[in-house]
Length: 103
Image (cartoon, rainbow, N blue to C red; front, side):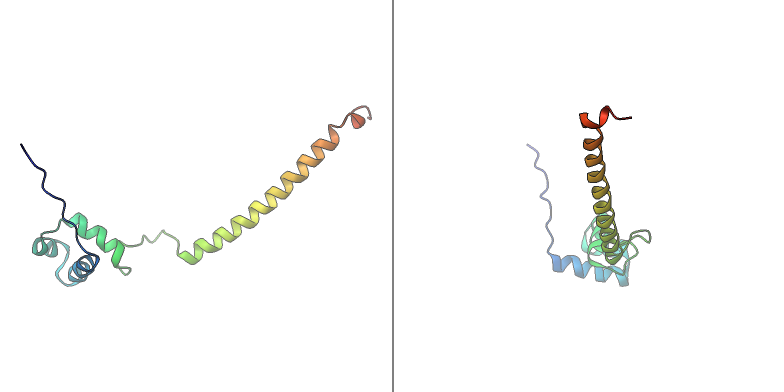
């Protein structure tokens, strides 16, 4: 009977220290020293190192930019909903039998 090797669980502190070590030793060397795969170190780097180029793509907007966009979109949605309500009311008025006979 074969048993799967247990998945190692690392603490947050260990991950942060590993990311700090990556800054001085490099990703591959830290991976060898700690016995952690480079993929794990890369994902930890994305999470715990805000200065890392991996943590945020240059194309990704900042939190403030996203907040501005949400505010703008809410305003636009409100305007479109208002127009929609007006169109519904005008449709009801013009579909009224009283106005159908007038031309």
